[in-house]
Amino acid sequence: MMLLGRGRAEGIAYFGNTRDSVLAALAPRLAMWLVLGGLTLGAAPQAISGVKVLFALCLILLPAVVTNALARHWKREGLWMRYITATWWTDWLTLFVGLMVALLMAIASPRLLQSATGAGILNGVEFGYSLWLTWYVARVGLLLRRGQAMVLVIAILGSLGLLVAATGLLSPHQRAWHEFLYPLMVQQTQPQPH
Image 1 (tube, helix red, strand yellow):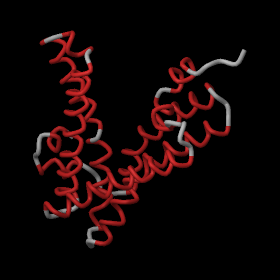
Image 2 (image 1 turned 180 degrees about the vertical axis):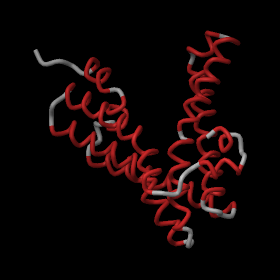
Image 3 (image 1 turned 135 degrees about the vertical axis):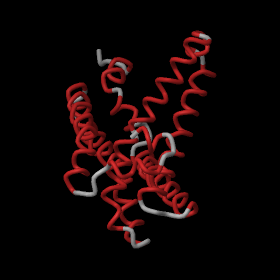
C-alpha cells in the first residue's frame, strides 16, 4: 500500500489477482457497511433507513462496476482483479493522509484545525490525494495511458455523482450518505414528536 501511495509502481506486485484477494479487500468495507447499516436501522427503524443502507452499498460497489466495464472495453479484464484489490486497500491511505495533515495542523495551529479554513484545507488535501491515488493505481494496475486513467477517474466520479443526484431528486430532503455515516448524530438533531 505504502509503495503505491508514494507513487512507486512496483507496489502493484504485492496485491493478488484472484477472487479471494478481491473479497479480502472488500471485506473491511462490507464490515463497516454492516455496522453502520445496523446503527442506521436501529436509530430509525423505517423504510427510508433501509433505502439509505442500500444506497450506501451502491456507493461502495459502483466504482468496481464502472472500472470493470472500462477494463473490459480496454481489453484489460485480466488485470482488473489485481487493480480493484489494490484500489480498495490503498483507499485507506487517504484516511492516513488526512490524519497526518490534521496532526500537522494541530501542531502548527490548533485553532486552524477547528476553523472552516482548516476543514477546507483538510478536505482539499484528502480529496486531491484520493483523486491522484485513484488515477495512479488505475494507470499502474490496468496498464493505462495517462488519458485513459483520467477517463476512468472521471467515470467513477460521474457515476457516483449521478447516483447521489438521482437520490437527491427522488428524496430531496434526505442526505442519505451523510445520514448513513452518522446515524446517531442525525437522530439526535432531528425534531422529536411530542
